Image 1 (tube, rainbow, N blue to C red):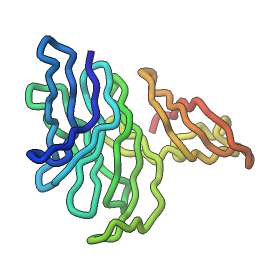
Image 2 (cartoon, rainbow, N blue to C red; image 1 turned 90 degrees about the horizontal axis):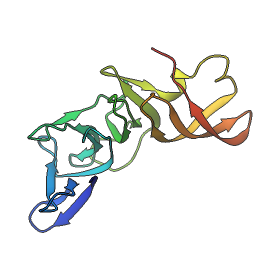
Image 3 (cartoon, rainbow, N blue to C red; image 1 turned 90 degrees about the vertical axis):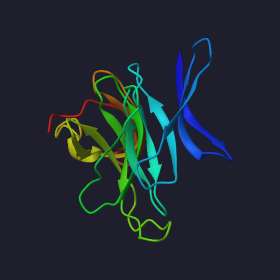
Image 4 (cartoon, rainbow, N blue to C red; image 1 turned 30 degrees about the vertical axis):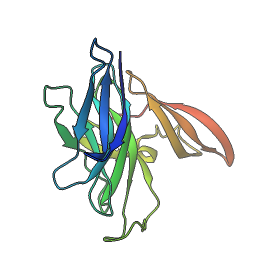
Length: 173
């Protein structure tokens, strides 16, 4: 009975929103992180938490909006050396998948390629680094599409030079 996305109008600009299938068909403006001008929502879990990004000038910050009365946003950390990121999916455990990268300040230019990440237990991990050594051998993760309530991640990658889909159960950090 809920969906997340974004709305654009002359009053708010572009903001992440939560649509609630109640009698009023409520549309909740999730807002932005302090100092930012726009935001987008990409995914949500069954608990009403929303994953997305908030945008300062020439940047993007990964964020989760909580399912409290204020829908308080929480910025997620980027990998060391990175200054930008995006949260795309969230499960009921609060595990989030997305990307982390470094962008040149004052531009929209990415200085590094985005690295796929998972946020869990208050920390960020590069997805490639949480592959189990034996079953992960020969894999290069190139995409992450969803994370289920067991913490498993479905996506795509290269296995021994061949494009393949995968179901990844990350190892504990």
